[in-house]
Length: 346
Image (cartoon, rainbow, N blue to C red; front, side, top):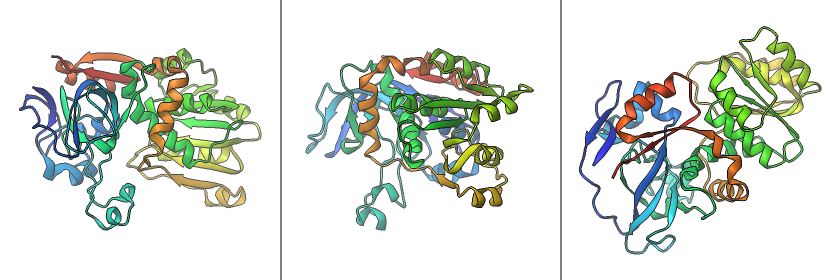
């Protein structure tokens, strides 16, 4: 079968013909993949930063892809949570089950995680084996391809959760990419009073946000954007979500929060940035990190999507066959997309 793999301890990815996975083990399920989204993590693996190398080098070669949806076509002995024919999405954060944190009942804190698409073979392929305890049924009223959004939306939902979001709050989002867009849509669907999104020369992604119905968009490459954003902030936003991994916006976000406001950092940036400690202390602000999504978030996202699936559909802007994966990655790097799906062939 065709698969997109990381094979070498170097930059780049390869499309290869690889063997099908073996029959699912006692606790596993086999999924026929319907669609898988390209994530910023996948782009980082292609570039091969130091963090990815440290986690993945010993696992190579490995098939990438973790934002996925598909049909269960086989189940191992003892799997009762799903059945053959179910449409499911995959939580890729598979815990080892053996480390001290896992033995203490804290798989989210696992010290030796084996994430799908990074250490375990992933979903940029027609077939995928995963533990049955890491899949969730998708309701029939959610269109199949939207299932590929559940994983990134779970990241966005957890960012709001960490920030302590409550209905009626004003929300500021830094980064108009797929995670930031997900934060904006989820905040609106959960009752935010206002949502503002800030970016830098992200015209295509702002177009997606306008299609989604958002008006308070601030492109910081425009000369008056900072002044307009400050005026719109007024007495301050209740929470801010940093979803682009750009450390240099931290002080800007803190300045736009109301006293006792909360900034949640969800972007995976590598650069350090300034932090105005005096501002943080005087306004009694909080800065919180977002990582390792707890399992409880997944059902909540699926339930919210099921209420109004059409609210999420514009997040998907491109669909390409798996055979064009390299071209699809280049499209993502060009910044002309929101969520790009790869569709396996027969």
